[in-house]
Image 1: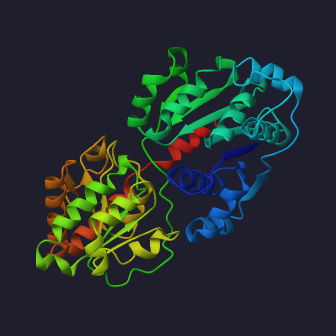
Image 2 (image 1 turned 30 degrees about the vertical axis):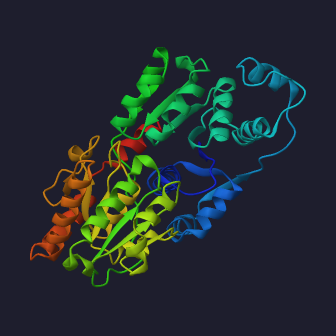
Length: 386
């Protein structure tokens, strides 16, 4: 039996990291023959990222890189695209439709046995190609929803299709929060297909030894509204209004629409060398030396890949009390805040004071211990391979 993990993307985020870590676990802890099906741009992004490249090479993971262009079949266009109102003209397919077909055709060529499993993570073209595949084959097909950010698009596409139990389709949500959000948009007869799994795949091999830690706070997320990088920047500016806090450095790692505004807010502090704003392909290099990691996501901080990476490198956590964060990060050494500047500023002060205190080393050890015991990965893997 073969297990195909399907993902399309131009870069690396939470879904792409989760897919690769799941591939690692399936290769090492199951008897499945696993292959990851991806596009060329994502493969290149994986290869440039030290952590992802390590997983690919260390596990000798099989890869199938698809071409996102090629001939399409008129019969299939008639049957699938026209029926689902995605395409009105049979003879001419624009590039977005061509991309969707290439993913369908790839799976059609790859999957040889009805026992094989197809597990789709991300990317509109990959998702739609897998949906069409699920309508025309009896294989078990799993759709994984890893973020609230994509729930509406997922539901919109899933609702176009009819599933009966004989199709063996499952919709897995990465957390209860995502599951609850999906239920708002997904049509009722699809809800029976959904599950939620309360955990990520905590595979972050330490690529670096931990040196003596420095007085650095790290914020590492996409610079978009739900991650609240602007709110954190405003709080950091206020934090530096006290001279004694200037022994601390703050690094923002990421990219996105809010980057220009972050640079404007913290222009003076950047010029003074107190703040850095940049993107990195190697977050572990930073986390090995930082003391505090901040994550203030509107929808909740579980299961954030970067939070778990930070825990693995013994960073103290500063988290927003949103979603199921407190339920999942339930240990005394976490500093919580609301999504107001006053609350975030207080949390920065509290976290840095803990890092300066005699309790710092025990807090570090407690964070790492919680990381080591937080998730039952095998239950999820067992369910996948039924």
